[in-house]
Length: 145
Image (cartoon, rainbow, N blue to C red; front, side):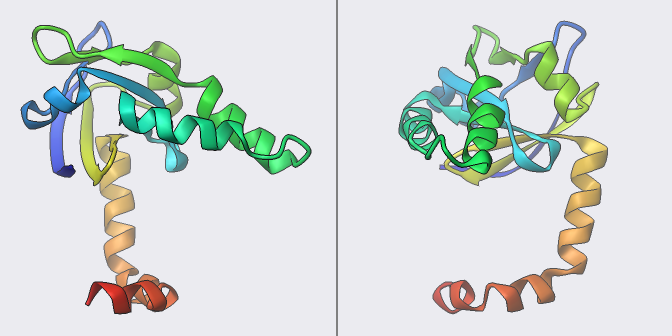
């Protein structure tokens, strides 16, 4: 289970240190484009459950084809090296605007990798609108309480 927020730096070679507590679960993983201009890092086992569902979406629907291309075509296998790092491909770093400072956010079954400034903007906006968001998700919130 992945939880929490972690500040890290990407080095000049595109390497990112994976938070130490997650390394065993991410020895083999897949990184891909995520919504909101972040990257998503899945353990290989989770990816093997998600990818077939995305691939099975109806190809006769434009939105299904677009999501398949967005998620599957941008995906890349990654492995944690001996120093606990993964290499983020250049095209994914460019997509997410990752330069130096990033935030790695644990979202239970996956990690999101954000440019630090974009993370802070998104987080502030979400916190500011949390009451409105909770209202929109009222069915879910009754299960949380």
